[in-house]
Length: 525
Image (cartoon, rainbow, N blue to C red; front, side, top):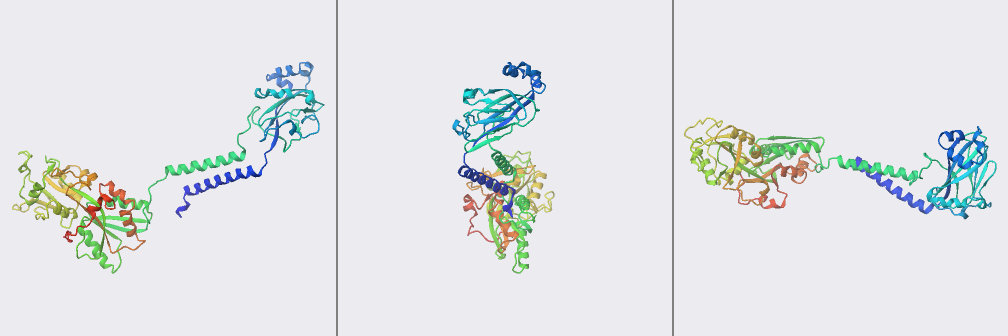
């Protein structure tokens, strides 16, 4: 199922972690009472001789200068004990619950205490005022009694103890009673570290949330945001018909196959007329079925093809193209009509063409049944039909008496190739194909230049509607139905626009795509 995608799973896990963390914090705040806690740890436990060698002799001499003979004792050790408030509440003097004057005891059994000193950080040096005999500071053979020192959260003091007997590493234990809390050993990686800002559980949740969010963001960044066609279907489909629309059909087929695994779309463009005829014949042979075939056509089907169902795809622009050597980039509609009637047969008979450009005008035309030719005859020639062809290859004229030097070709690609290879040749093509071919250039009509950005607002005449035909209504859930939706309403619309056409689904194309009731129905013969 598409729901179980990587980004969806990570998004759900991230959301669950966030909700769990929020509920956990809320529960903790409501259910878990605020704790008072004193923590302690041994930060130094070393022989006195080692302290001297490591530079700590000054501490020893300053603290025990009245007993210089202690430096000669082979078993003398120094212990530095850190005691701190590492709970969530401040501790006042009356929070110590013992009945004795002192608040805490520090035991060093089996070693014997020879002397003590107390230090505090600069920002808490006021604590030293509490360490007096009157407040309860004293020591016995193996125990130090510490006063009821008030400690704000995170504040600490240190106890430096000189010991004899025993060995380095003998246990040290601090005990005492604290209201709503207790005294516990804690750990540190450095002698003067700072208590962590977050608890271990908080750090774990933060790490998990961060990893989840980063993973989700990575998927969003690198994934392909192109949405697959609506209702992808498997199977095989053939697209036939218009050769002018073939570049669009090729890209549509490749993109649909990429987005929809298990589909195969072949493009077999011939001409609009041949495509409609093949669709009509295969549909009739299917006896009520709908073949896996779509015919793209530049013109409507004939009245005899009653089983065909059309969908308007896009407005397409066409243009006249001439060999690059022809020195004209604009022709009037009257000049074009005269050329295709045979009234003008050589280029130097036209205005603006030098006398020495004395080449015959060679018409590279499409065969009957071509939608591009049909639109050219209706919109540019004013309904006139092109003269009969007089050359099989646009190189030799088989009938010297013919009014025009004209050959017929079966595809847009062959027209472009022939015009590019034949000096003095002229032809017509779909605009996008003509704008990218080498060896030819386009010509405007009556000063009107065809451009994809001005299809709707221009009065440029050589344009028409591209149709997609199926035999009857394709079954729901079929590849034909899915591809048709993709072409008319889905991701295929971007491909159509990319090739310079205006989709009929867009509002500005409405007036052009609307059928003309006065237009003859039979346009493919």
